[in-house]
Length: 112
Image (tube, rainbow, N blue to C red):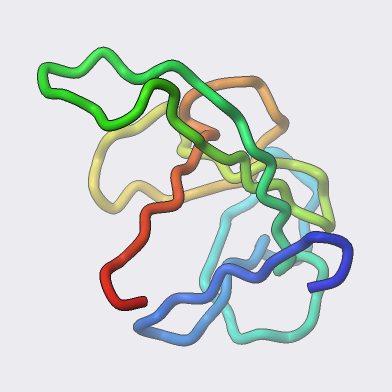
């Protein structure tokens, strides 16, 4: 998109990440939705360098590059509510609070 924004499209459904009802509220749900050209479907990838996590296995590289995904429409970021690690947790937008639950990593998928 223009201005350094992107749409995030599902490979399986062809739908894009969408802030429900173009809401500007904290806790607004993030859905997959058909591309309608709305700014609530535009995302800015804001790079954030963080130290490697304290894990019981080796991690490649010194620091790791993560991103905050900021909504063009609301200025809020993609957020995992309550720092949930549960599969199937619903995503929301929330004010940027610097939490790890607002950091996302781009991982290359073979052949894509």
